[in-house]
Length: 335
Ligand code: UDP
Ligand code: MG
Image (cartoon, rainbow, N blue to C red; front, side):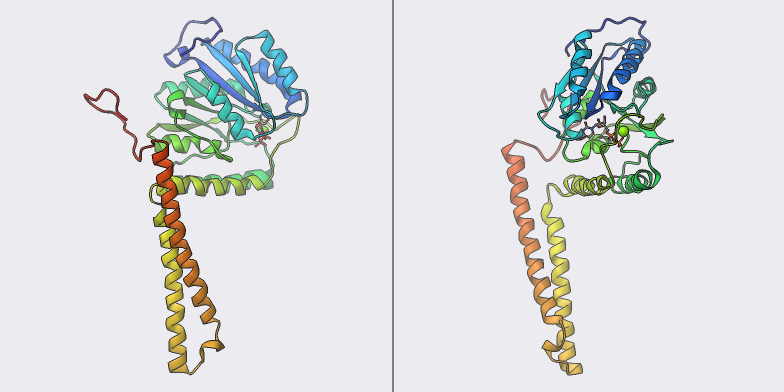
């Protein structure tokens, strides 16, 4: 672990508060917020008295965000800046921040001052209780009711049910992670919100605490309603990968059998109609249905077989295993 540069100014309060912190902040056109955000966060972190760094990721801003960040970084060496060549999205920005973070505890946060840096201390207190992931819950969220709060409420319910990890607010950026739980997490799409789920599936202890939330004062939100649909599609992917990744043929095969069953039922019904009700084959749409479902059913099964080949290539080419060892006795390096 590299040593972070800020000297420890206060007495150490707890094991967690002597851990080094990395605050990771994606920035996309947040010029009016950056200075105040930085000032507040630095003052909170200094009060904590542990080594810290702030990593800003400029996600292709077109305003002067980057120049401001560079200026702030020139004053304090533990303010670090990464700049993307173009806008890759908040998830990619977080991933870059996490990849470069050196702290033992990683704290993502938004750049728009909707989160309160003062909540970091409370997140850390929970980590100190032994949790690996502490998720913020914007209990009094200050966003649009129709376009944000309702879709988000539904999405959170759905994610909790499907993932089996029950949190009120996956979308809150302000969270705290012990570094180890992020080691194997690979982020795609809008998936940064699912990190607590991945972590929990890997055996991490996850909890949530209410955090403050303010309305955005400067700049605009970068998202609209379409994000909810993206999140649901990501959720399907996550669920599929977690449950069926090593057995994709079960999903495709089941869909295939289902289509073949419909095809067979339509066939039986067609024969019954012809011989008992004297309706000829071409008087009903049944022959078309039979053919369609038969072809689709076979296609599904073939796709499942292809997915099996892909999955094997993935695991074997990268030397990935289909299990993960938690601990071992008398084995030096369990794999
Ligand atoms: N953000 C980013 N890249 C993007 C969109 C957003 O880095 O393509 C950052 C943005 O600057 C902010 C955070 O992600 O720090 C959350 O964005 P926003 O406040 O627009 O989301 P909301 O709070 O409305 O959900
Ligand atoms: Mg925001």
